[in-house]
Image (cartoon, helix red, strand yellow):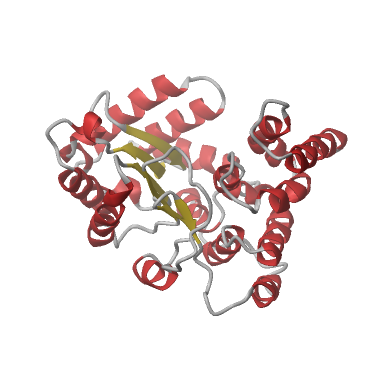
Length: 330
């Protein structure tokens, strides 16, 4: 067990980035980094200021991009991270945890999709700030550009520990993909657990497992400590599109307590309008996840429950009951 707070923070970023002790650990490590003159401490200070409401998102983005240009020599090569760029960043523990890019032609100017993707992914793969980059989201012009974009990311970014990858011409996926591409994707990115391409969620669970056996395999991890391996297994079950497997993944998320917040963005995506047939199974489980679910996912559930929402009556009813359960919990 590492005693240095910075080493402990880096370990937490791998295994438990939303654990109950993370905020305190981040604060201690950030202060220590600042005291040592390490610029990563400045990035942690920016991150904490955003989390505590001391910075708005626009100011944070401007400051974070300026920090990256000044302190990470690998990233200024690409103008995708220049002022007014098409990038949106998420930070965790002074590292980039997710990046969202708009690579549609009208945003790129003369730069082609291949050039833009190559330049950015190569830069991210070399950048110390991106050692824990778990999520990449790419907006493209047309679905027929998906394979080109995926090929460039695969070639240039095999060193990235990606867990979530979205390549889409739409703002949200439109269901689950039936053709299973899991083996190839898992070969290149062994930690990947959520993929959206061609506008659909691609299941990454082992294709030879039927729904009930996959659920039993997940249940074997009950009581396991948070780790990246556990997160990958839960995430693949969560995005499988199979009922029993999804429910087994939700059981494990509930048992994680605050650490389960690492799945918040993925669940929010799956609860989007007409995105996933798994939405009813997820909504039914949300009150068991704890306070983070009300804070992070409550607004999405409220949208589903509203009269004007494009949701089936049964789903709206489930959402209403979920909100009542949220409000009844301490």
